[in-house]
Amino acid sequence: MSPSVRGIEAPAAPLRRLLLELGEALLGGGLPVHDVEEELHRLGRALGAPEVRVAALANGLFVALDPDEATGFQPVRTALRFEQTADVLHLVQRLRTGEIDGPAALVELDGIRRAPARWPAWVADLAALPVGMGVCLFLQPVAANVLVAGVGSLIVAGLTALARRLPLLRPLLPVTAGFLVALLVLSLARASLLDGPLRTIVATLAILLPGGLLVTGLSEIAAGAASAGTARLVSGAVQLALFLTGVAAAATAIGVPATALANVQIAKPSWWVIGLGLAIAVAGLVVNVHTPPPAIPWIVAVIAVSATAQVMVGSTHGAAVGGLAGAVTAAAAATVVHWLPGGPLWRVLYLPAFWIVVPGSFGLLNTAQIEVGNGLQSVLAAVSAVFGVSIGTLVGSVISRIPRPSLAPPRLPA
Image (cartoon, rainbow, N blue to C red; front, side):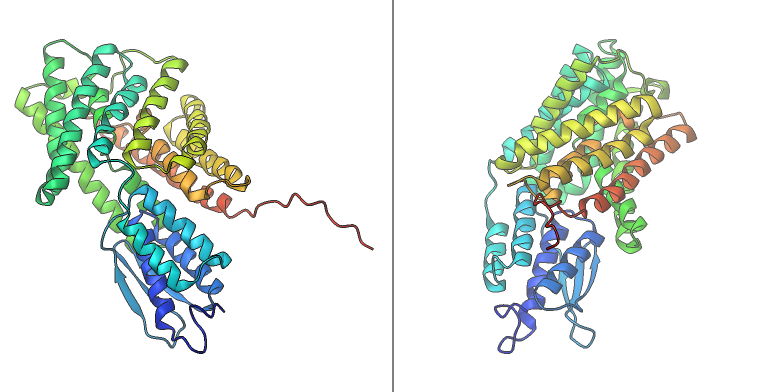
């Protein structure tokens, strides 16, 4: 037992509060509910509550220290930035190893929540510019399309800043962004100033698309957390429908036919163009999610390995297998880096790579067959790609539990 948290002199309530606060922070950081439950179970055992009961939902969690103890509930009040989530994960690890006690952990957790961002919000919003242009480099590597993606990304950045200042407008962000970006791109396409508008639209909206939400929901359902997984799937599907509604409204307003939104790639990118686009997009991602600077080189290395595996496998075997290969490779690379002396935590390394691998969420959107007018085939292609990454994520969570190998030579029997 940890006497500073739970012992003869201390009631169980402080420990329950500690687990509730940490669970809320992990859920606010976007972790799947089954991972949050596992983290709290392991922490409870380390702190002297081996029979801890945890039930996490997408928007809150219940915790009881044993079957006969009162249950506490904690709702998720605010979402955390990626850098804050990384700090919370480090705090949980230090609690498990006894480097910090419960009261000090609660004080530090409050400081993590109140910590200011590493750079102003407008800088993070402008990161949509390199993201959109970088993604467009390997989705539609034509100079006119890349430039238009940059202009459209400025629109996305402005709408994101406006939605943050006016929370009542936040639910309208997907449909508004989809409409304005599609209006710009389709108008230029109608004027014969660019070709292949759909991929340019997708690249511009990449930073907002809910692919990560959909994959997390599928992973939760596969892990047995049906309530949370279903809620995330419905939320992601609604957001995706709002984006598509905005795009369809823009097409109707301009008067372009559905064939103008076919998934056409004007030029196939070479390897160096794919690498350049990925580098630019990753730079934007690092700024957008407020990545902790010490972890950036390791994160970039894991992303490079996983993206290479996804592109190579996906180009031969299709989007679903490519997504599976990318997710598994990201998990394996993150595990190896975590084993190194001073290496960041596994999840700190894996989450950015996950955002790159997830089709329709951010990165390699050539795996997401978002097409209009092609019926059942495009839907099946998109679903299979999302399922591929979901399975890869589950396999990756198993890989992450492999214990660090000992480098000490085995002792010979006396």
